[in-house]
Length: 219
Length: 219
DNA sequence: TGGTCATATGACTGTCTGGTCATATTATAG
DNA sequence: CTATAATATGACCAGACAGTCATATGACCA
Image 1 (spheres, protein in one colour):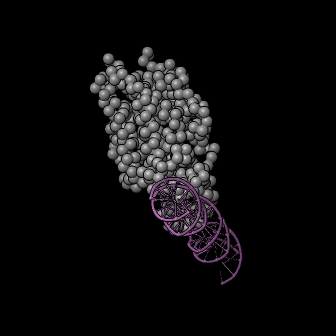
Image 2 (cartoon, protein in one colour; image 1 turned 135 degrees about the vertical axis):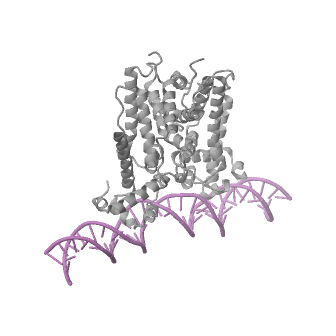
Image 3 (tube, helix red, strand yellow; image 1 turned 120 degrees about the vertical axis):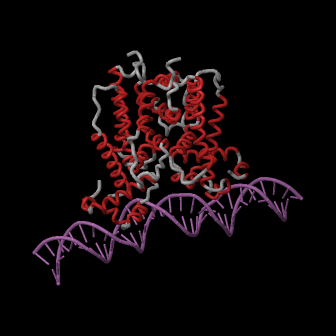
């Protein structure tokens, strides 16, 4: 948890620091992110960091917390779809919001992505629970889908969760590559459109593949 | 490329060194893997490493080369399936061989997995081409599937490649988790069975999902 | 035995890291 | 104007790292 001193900081200074930290932890994984580089970039003394945070881990967990907050904010802002709709329509909404997060907060999303895939050299209960939460959320969705008859009854629920989770994790990267957007350039440049027909088509197709598969049913 | 000195080494010593290096690069990503720890583990002087390899990068690329060789060996040993069969049957065979690699050479597979997902602080043309090759291979498979009419004609080929590639990359991890195998314990312990009916069922289900989707066709 | 070559060694160098802390600066309040 | 508290600073510390190199060891041959 950041100290009171950190929250007393003038808004602009606090934002500048946070931005620099996000950049650093987006470019490097935990072990290789450098406090020294952060303070050099933002132009403050190293000791100041330790007035704001207990240590490197504290700063890092704060950034992850920020990411979670921002993503949840997006999920709440986007009006939740009609609860009566098919699981697959709901899934489309969910995937789209996830991808939106990656386009609105690209660097922060990169920090979070690293947290899920990369090495973290310490054990944090909160982080573990964050990982599990994403999985559990999809699990509950699949159970609903099975109960409603949207999902074929012979489908192994765990496998379904695996499929949906893996694809949703990587979808943002696919969109970026598909749109020819350089992930590194994203963020400091202009905001990117995420509501284009082309991106909508990707969601449509992916949900269609999840529902009906790649196979040709006409033959 | 390793030096001649390295290949002149007694078989047991060379193997011991390689094993220790694989362990280190499986446990840590490139930047955090430590030459000092490798030599400590195998009980030789640090200078010796630099008689065998030009530098850390040279050693690392050699390990990746090893991984590629071992995987290709498995692909060749497993008799290739009937070329006339459906794309999905072929896919099943491909996924199964990939997962087999992860169970037969778990630590080496982990090194390769890190190479594809983690940060590598240098640019290597060969590594880039290895990544592209996996993608291109699946791409060709999808094109075939479309041409043969196995894959529905309205499917976006790039999206299909994305789906297959993502799932094949993560499938091994899913199997390990599903079977309750600790990835860290794997390798130094006893060999694990990969030809169980339970694992076969996972392949069946995944291919079924890829072909027909999760949706319920009866309603 | 002596000489030549391949190999092994580990102390050492330069560089980077996270984190500390005595000191300096600034803001607030009486 | 002064006293007190809050904040900022950067030299410094201990530890880890990749990589070097003068020296030592051992194998092979004449």
